[in-house]
Length: 440
Ligand SMILES: [Zn+2]
Ligand SMILES: [Zn+2]
Image 1 (cartoon, protein in one colour):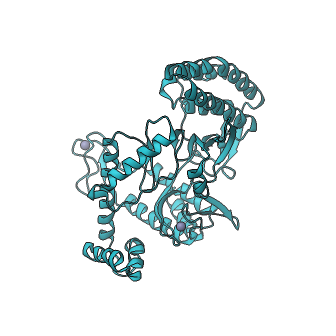
Image 2: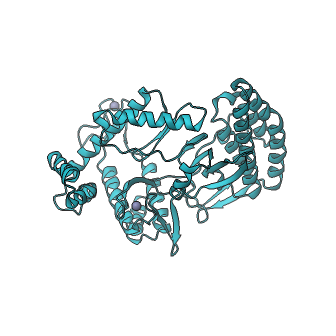
Image 3: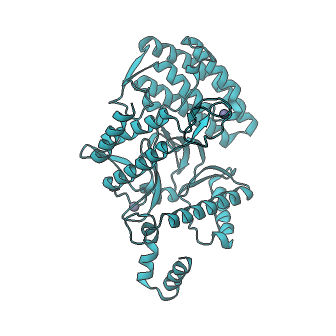
């Protein structure tokens, strides 16, 4: 196969053979689709393993060259270049890309610098904020970006506009306007101050200024807001219909949250992403919790992602062959069409075929349920996997437990059930209903 692909490549580069080009472009689609002729899952897995190996080598090469990796998957790598000016950072990235491409191993990888942030705060793909300058590079790229909430546009003196992009999925689940406003205001004030000071002052002074801001003015304002919110909305009920992505308890369809608590957790979580102000943030967090009568060490005080997630790997765009992993619960490249949710390709902006996604999900569901049924059982005491079929207990007299937990499996089924309802996937829904009624 390697030989075949190499020949195609040669045909394209030397003779400009259009058919070889088509074959190359659609090669991966042929390889991964179970309906294609001569489909071989082992071949697919081998190629996937090679890709993964190459990816790991690429990441370690980047690290070896001194860049810090913020986020990396097969289609996107976010690097921290430690440079103060964007033009330096761009030069540095170009240099890195060139030196990586000079290595024979990475010859075939295609790199493209999509975006340069002045400053970026990253929690995960659906929770981040950053400041960027509206320059050429971004303008050409504007169509590629997900529908982010551009919250604040700050005009600076001079011709360049600086924009603060805030994309925090976590606060959308506190459905009270006052909470969301407070969140946006606090976080944007903090980043605005930080950014302005970074431009004008020395690094030590910057840290001191933001520390003072948090323990002084910001704390006072937050105390006031949190108290007011706590008084006005002591609790709020969220239902499964309205917020299908939330991590609901096993059987309940409702959840009661304390908006003031959720707000203070979210703000402190975002602020705590900067380790330099850890102490101030933790003080602020303790004080806020005290205001709403929650113990600082209780489980409730800990922030956890309120949203469920289910990632469907390797979704292929039929139009442009772009492959990516989609988190079906959080992905932002989506829209509602005919009352059903559809996902879009970030590359060519066409919607994916929902039927295809449904079949992929059914396939994944079948594999998971087979995996659950034929799983091994393990001794609770000595952790040894059960060898025979008959024994009721382990040789050490311990009881057995399953290796994959039943609750986790049911949870996955429920997440899929929600996805099938929202996207109107009847076949998937039917098989899920069957499984859920039989397992519970
Ligand atoms: Zn596409
Ligand atoms: Zn045992």
